[in-house]
Image 1 (cartoon, helix red, strand yellow):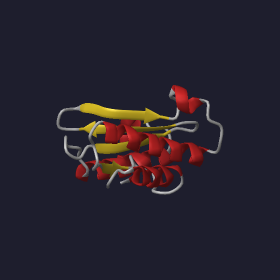
Image 2: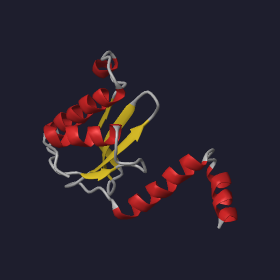
Image 3: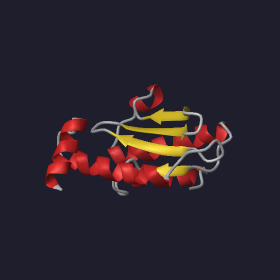
Image 4: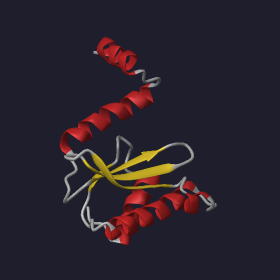
Length: 131
């Protein structure tokens, strides 16, 4: 089993065990979660400095709404990363409602549901998204 995991790590060019763990969790989630035009998939990506959210229709292969903390209006805001994640969550909810999207399927992208990911999800719910 360990040899198989190392082969997968080498093939995928994944550098650390932590990254490999997230990759495995991500694949497990993506088997179940799928975005449709009625309920797009809300996927979250977090880097060390920023957080990104997309609403994706997997059937058409299109991104319907995208928001990040690196956008013009958001980039100037100072504060903790969790506070910025909260603002991004509210902003994605506003944009989604403008696009006529009320219900989404949440894809945490292999990240644990705490910290910035949880804060973003809670803020999106407060903003009017249902998931």
